[in-house]
Structures are given as C-alpha cells and as structure tokens.
Image (cartoon, rainbow, N blue to C red; front, top):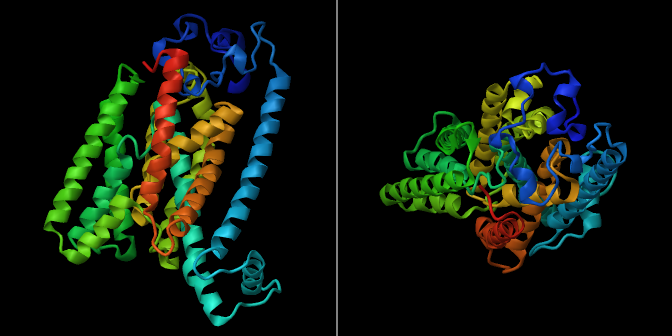
Length: 406
C-alpha cells in the first residue's frame, strides 16, 4: 500500500485500507510529531498540511510546496556555487572569480588559462581543498541534524547539542593521545566513527522511554554526554605532550585551517555514503512523523529504520568531526530554517539541509579567515556565537506559541 504522507491525515488510516480494530485507533501521545509544531509549520498529515477534513487530497497546496521546494533547491544550489567561487578567491592573496574559473577550466581541459605559479599554488593547494572540505563537513552536519530530528521525533536533536560531536571528538583525541595509527590516515576517522556510534546509541537508549523521546530527557542526556566527553578530552590533554595538545585543541575549537587534499579524500567516502543513503529514508521519516503505530501499519519497520539511520548519523558526524573538530548548531539551525520555508516533508528537508549546511559552513569559514585577517577565528566558536542566540529564540518562540515542549 502506498500512501503519500503529505496528503494523509492521521485519522484517515481506515479509509486507506488499514484493517479495523486497534490498528486504526487514534495515535497515542507519542505519535504526535514534535518537530513540526516547534517551528510553527503544520504537522505532516494534518488537515493544515494539505488534507482537508473531507478526505480528498488538496492538490493545490501540495503543488505549491513542490514549487517552493524546487525554487529553494535551485536558489540554494546557485548560492552554494557563487559562495564557493568567492571563497576560493578571497584572502590575503586575492584571486578574481574570473581567474578562478579560468584556472579550473584549464585543469579540466576546457580551455581557460593557468594563473602564475604563486596563484596556482594558493588556489589548488590551500583554497580549493578548504572549500571542498567545508562543503563536505557542512553537508554532513546539516543532513545529520535533519535525520536526527526525524529519528528522535524531536526538534532539538542535533549532533553538537546532544553530545554526538563531543563523543566523536573523544575517539579522535584518544587516537592522537595514544599514538594510534593502525589504519594510517583513516585511524582518526575510524576512531571518531566508533566513538560517535557508541555515543548515538547511548543517547538513543537513555533518552527514550515508553516509545517516545522527551525533550527534557534528551537535553539532560546531551548535557551529561557533553560533560563526560569534556572530562575525557581534559584527561587526554593532561597526559599529552605539547605537540599532541596542539592537535587536541584543534578538535575542541573546530577549524578547517589544516585542509589538504588527502584530508578531503579521507573524509569523502564516509560523507558521500551517508549523504547518498539519507534521501532513501525520507518517505519513511514522513510516515514516522505520523507516529510509530501508524508508521508500522503503513509498512515501516521502525526499529530497523532507526538503527540504520543511527549508523548514517554516526558516519556523517564522524566524517565531519574527524577533519574539522567540534562544530555545533549547523545541524540545528539549517533544518529549522528550511522547515519554516517549506514545511516538514523530509523529501526536501534531508537533501535541502545538506545544501544549506554546506552554505552555512562555507560562509562561516570565509568569515573566520577574513574578519580578523591575518589572524583566523576558530570556526566552531563562530558557529556557536550565531547558533546559540538562534537556539534561545527557538525556545522562547515555542514557549510563546505552544507553552514549551513536553
């Protein structure tokens, strides 16, 4: 049975062919999606979401959302392309956008012209690896945030806020402090992935009770995980030598300053695997937003999907943390902004969050290395400076409109 969640109200399960009895009972409290009301958008499957009370699909709002999603996708893609071009050219050694394009065309055999020796070195050895790394890390964090909010059914789930990034950083820091190198360049990424996976599972188990995730429990779990991870990182610093302390500090503050092509290639498989797998779960996440029981009746293996997405989130977070350190709030800010613009449907939200996350991190990195030039601000500090006020605003807005989160 195939049902479009964007045109299906929770109360219409019987009309679409589900068997009678308890299976068609109204969803319990845990089945109410928390992500949607948090930003003021209509809940998926509610009458306001395009399904009138009479039961016939409202085609006009659905067509309007598809038009908005297409417009946003084109706009975000163009903004990302333009920002990447500007970011590659701006810096202490200025390169015009035209020269950047000419050099890229020359390298891929489409004409153009090479820059002088210094310009080619700056562009291809410093700027472009950094741009590529910002795209991968930002896309991974944005996508991971959208997936976590869908899996937990909670608008505050974000790798940095609930401690996943800090947990992955513990793995990376431990591999440095202990001098591990069993997988060569992949050792730090592997350790970050394992630690991130353990942290995601820990948060998932501790924050869920009675089939639902309470916001207060999730936040308190995140506080506890962040505190514990901070203590482990502090312990690693205590036993580390000066060279190791410098490397560990990098993970605590978050930065793309050490971007190189080998780092890009080291993180590329994990990021691509996660980013390509995530959209395949978008429709099932829409069904899960109706509630666990309706989702199961519509054919979704909820626990299997959750475990698969936990692995995807750990993969994306580990890929980001292993090369950029702890960067918070990207996965919280981007999905909320897109949900406000186009509603809670995950078929746009998941890939759109990847695009938006790449834009936010590329812009943040450009600001980090140009605002205080020649000094460079830590990228993680910069995203936290802008992300924290957004978090406060989100809390106050939800309290004003709904009386807070349960």
